[in-house]
Image: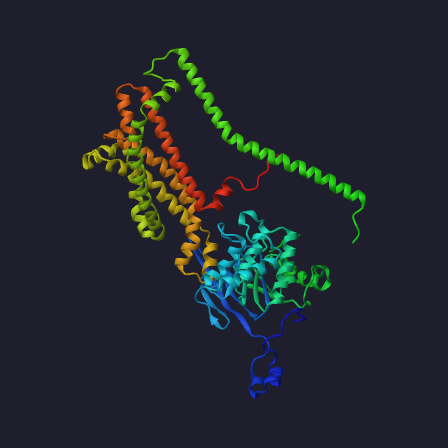
Amino acid sequence: MGYRRGHPPLQYDTGESRAHRDGHPLDSLISTAVETYIEAINVSKVYPTRDGPVRALHNVSFTAQRGSFISVLGPSGCGKSTLLMIIAGLLSRSSGSVKVNGQEVTQPLTDVGIVFQVPVLLDWRTALQNVLIQAEARGLDLVQYRERARALLASVGLAGFENKYPHELSGGMRQRVAICRALLHDPPLLLMDEPFGALDALTRDQMVVDLQRLWLERQKTVLFITHSVSEAVFLSDQVIVMTPRPGRVDQVLAIDLPRPRRLAMRQSPAFAEYTHQILKRFLARGVLRED
Amino acid sequence: MGMLSDDTEQELRDIEAVEERIQQALHRRDVQARISGVAAPLLTLVALLIVWEVIVRLSRVPLYLVPGPTQVVEKLGLTLPLLVKHGWVTTYEVILGYLLSIAIGIPLGLAIFLSPVFARSVYPLLVSSQAVPKTAIAPLFVVWFGFGVLPKILIAFLIAFFPIVINTVVGLASVEPEKIYLARSMGMSPLAMFFKIRLPQALPSIFAGLKIAIALAVVGAVVGEFVGADAGLGYLLLIANGTLDTPLLFAGFVTLTLIGIIFFLLIEAIERMAIPWHTSQRNGGAHESL
């Protein structure tokens, strides 16, 4: 999977080295390095409407390993946001099963950090208070988490803006506050629904770099929804390409580029090869049309 | 790190001088705007009063038709105790009617929001209650409740509570679904969700309703007094009307207007304290006049 700078040693190495460390004979039988964290099997979503049922998702299946960065990439309306909401337990699925951390998802997951396309900040709270609501909602020690919130805001370049209200912040800044809020309680899973969609290109690039850095510092599983091919390839270990509605998994692409990835890598031939593969798919499916 | 070259330092000083000048100009404009914000309406009012006085004097119109400002002020001075006594009765009716409309209006709005069944059953009745003109109901209330303050309080309540109900419902419903999704994924209980998210989000709308309602409560109290009363500014207006004491009529208008303005400003002050984040936005945060 490549080198991760600044990444603490994985808790579970391969079975062999654990056996070396602990010396227990059964250790070598324990399943290896990475475990499945998200498992979607034949997930479908049908909406009943006045004009008949609308199939948003059709038999979507994929797995995400713990600590990996997975992008779901597809055109508008392909159901990728629906998929994320189903995995988060915020939307019911029509059929199929979703397991997160080995458990079936039947109600809203709480051990997650979630970021939407709009920052969804509370107008009556400052940036710091907005981040802290994550701790308040969970009954965590506010004194301790206040410091952590400050540190998080500083790490995304918002030091000095803690006491500003949302209407005093730009769109990019608000989204950064939302990301800090999603990270405050250090959740093992991060769900992001086109978080940079409403931002300008330069801000997006910066956010992508910041996101990669934040992810490399902690061992988090990230499910990232996007419609930007280069963003997906840049950030992910795996890109799940979806078809237009009804959304199906078209292709799962493993991205084998070294980390930490730098913006300039986007011009490299290896990167271009990945984006090219996805482009070919989109052209074949009519997502993009050229004559 | 060397020092900046002389040229660059001079450039910097020039630019800083320009910035200083522009910033001072903005400051001056701000101060002017604030002063004129008070001075302009005041001067306009004074100018209108002067024009009014001049027209009255020149045209020699009889006092019982149109009194001039000086005569109104004179009357105000003469009848001050009377105005205060009746003004207080009306004020009392307005306050009680208003508080009642809040005490019933907000819970009603909450119930309509929380229960679709309740909403469906109550809403048509609510709307019909508003369609009936209160001037028509007022005599009925006098028959039922007599000449005391109760009918006036009830009329004030009846007119004032509707905008409160509507604005409460609208405010509570105005929360974007993403906020609710977020709250659920944070593990918030429905009660915490209500107090931390829905209620604060609803406050601007509720306060808008409260401001409309106070104006209506004053109208309601006066309407109630027109129909049957032995005290209050509405009653005083009727007396002045009956005796063709037009200066007194005007004096009554002025007092009533003052009461209305004071109440409105009071509600606005409470709003500023309750939702400072909203009011500061409304008046324009960072603005630049070019």
